Structures are given as C-alpha cells and as structure tokens.
Image (cartoon, rainbow, N blue to C red; front, top):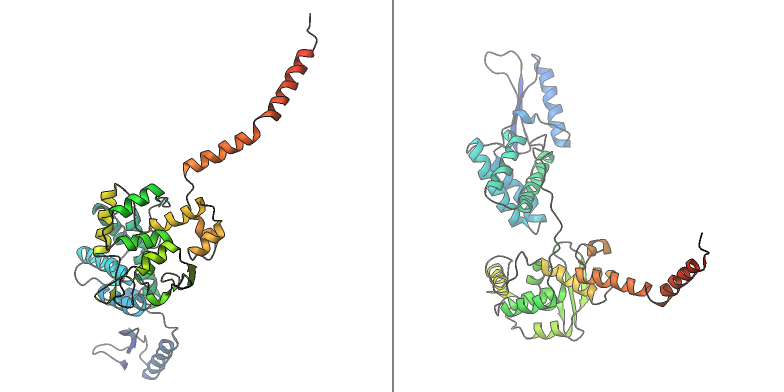
Length: 361
C-alpha cells in the first residue's frame, strides 16, 4: 500500500486495501507530498468506515460475495440458512449462464433479475416460490450495499407476485382420515402438530427436557421468533409422547440427531395426504387447523394467540378460518331471534289500521 507513479505518467497513484479488496486510484497531482497526504486521508476514511468506493470500477466475483454472505450473515443469524444456500446457488448458476463463469456482482442489473424471474417461471416454480427467491436475492444485495460492494440493489423495483393468504385447514373428519393414513413414524409428529399448533421446526427440535409430564406442561424457545412459549399438554398429547421411546435427548430423532423437514418426514407426509385424498395441503396448514378448531370449540382469540405463541391477536387472526357452515348458522340464528310473535303483532296492527281507513267514493 502507498503511492507510486507509473512509467510514462506524471501524476501519482495510490493503492490500499478496503473491504478485503485492493483498490487503486489516481491522486490527480504531480506533487508527491500532496499525493502522500491524500493517501493518508483515504486510509483514515477506510479506517473510520466513511470511505465510499467507486463500485463501477470494482470487480468482485459473485461467488465470493455469496460465500461471504453465508458465512458472515446467513449461517450465524438465520434458522433457514440452508434455504438461502439453495436459492443463492440457483441464482449464481443462472447469472453464470447469462454473463459467464466469472460474473461479478457489479455486472448484475435489474434486467438480469427480470430474466432470473422469467427463468423460474419457465421452470414451473409457483408464484409464491418465485417470491421467496426474489426476497432472498433482495436481502443478499442489501448486505452487499452495506459492505460497499455495490451502490444499487438490482432487485429494487422488481414486482413480486401477489400472494393470496392461505386458508386451508382440516375438519375433524379429515383429521381422522389423515392420521389413519400416516405411517407409524410420521403419525406422532403429525398428531403433535394437530394437538399443539407448533411449527414443524419446533416439533422436530423438541427435547425431553422441554416436557414436564407430572404437571403436563411444555416449555420451549420458539425457533422462528426466539420467544419463550409455555403451554399445558392435553391428556391425549401426554399419553402420545410418553409412549415414544427415549433414544436420545430429542423426542423425534434419527441416529441421535433431530429430524429435519426434508427426507422421509416430507415424503411420508405427502404419501399420507395422497392416501387420505387430501389435496393442496401443507404441513404448516396443521398450525392453522389447530387455531381454527380451537376457536370453533369456543376458545377466545386471545387464548388462541397465547397457545400458538403469538404476541398479539392480530397474528392469530391470520390462522383462524371461519367455516361457511358457521357463517350460515350465525345469520340463521340472528334471523330466528328477530322473527316470531313481536313481528307478527306489528304486522297485524298495520293490517288493522289499513282496514279501518274509510274508502274513497
């Protein structure tokens, strides 16, 4: 690092390290002393974090920034870091197909993001899945801006698909059919989801230490929100969990390790749905099933929110669906309460009044 003058040139140049890269720029002066002062000022800016690079002149390989993002941000802070890894790998391969194997992050523009979006659509990805890819890419580029690799996020301004909120849940009959179709190893996992409303990740990471059978209580730290959640076990759930073998510290395990939502957990659940004749249903919809059935049984929304680990009833409202039959019963009940003798007497009075009026001749 320092100042130098290239052969055949009169002005000085300086070179220094910033953001893990060697930067070289002109001092725009023939005076060595002034050039040295400019170099010292630039070093101070880099040290203080106030230095803003000319990103147009930078050439940072995309794969290097993705690796840095995964190691510095995604893996240490996100539970879903494996999803980031898959999405960004897919994104990198798409960009290499468009721009070549040595593509740099500075080369990627809004047009390339639109091409990536169209590519996913052609590969028959669902609109919701495409949105997840775009959201992950947007977060990745935001961090690249913070790390001064680029100055503009190319995902900004890209239109996401409009997603309708999920409303799928199972009624009691469908639940019994699904449980009957489950394999012996997936049955307790699905039944636990229905009885507790827990997220799949929290169920699969459930430990025996989290369960207090004498007091029938479950206490966990939710993986998604990092918020503590404690609730009572039903007698049915207690009997179900007590019947499971204790092979390691995890309630649901394989070779001493907790299960994941992939592998046989996914395939067994999909097979059970197919055998039960249940379509367009996902494991996460079991959480909505729990919330909806709790409300239909008379639990108020605040209680449902607490049981599901929500900090407000507003979030719980997203998980509660009111069946069409309940809506019909509600309007019929109102109609019945307003009909009957009072309305009949009023109609009789009106008819009598009209009858007593003198006829015009």
